[in-house]
Image (cartoon, rainbow, N blue to C red; front, side, top):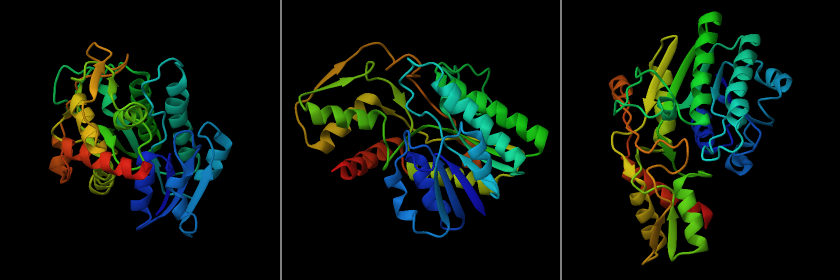
Length: 311
């Protein structure tokens, strides 16, 4: 198949490309705002690989670039969700970008889309672990709102133009090529000052952390093994890890001692942060996929990989 991957030079996208190239040809479309060309540079000599540096808001270029492909893996988004000062970032780079992707698909008669959504669409869910049919959905971050709006656009395009979609609501994804997030934040702070570590919130925030290769394998498994018009799955692991635990694992792996943990206080790291996340993964488990690594093991492995990558 000819696969078109938005955000393919990014954290998760670069791993997805590795898997897709084993069986398919791949075009990566990325504006490199968060992605890095170095993550995909080793593919540039591959005749089955093409890289286009461009923005999804450039519709004419996007329409031309998607022509001739069989499927779109849409991973591009503003995933640096802690910054809420500019309120239209996710509207443009999330919702509007998704509309442009879908419209280019319609015009070029591309019938399949695999979409990276997020557990943030659930907001502060009253039911935990939270299943896919939980509602009503009231996200509390602009990122979560843009992903939920994108899911709605995907559903509408599928109904009106007979497309098929696979929507995956991710837990917190960690691993090699990660460019931001709690692990990166802690590593960078400790490199500047290894005597103290400032933690956003109270450190009791607890979420499932999914290893990036488990994430990609879960997406591909769901795509290959479900065949409804709209297929949607939580993608995570059953257990969770507290932020304090992440901090202590980073400190230990970096070889520091007697680090003073300081806190900004309150139960969340920033406005829009959901402090307690539990995902019900029964649906994809019954389909036949289970994450290989637990949340703690995913964090531990990722810390090692990120430190090795940065050294």
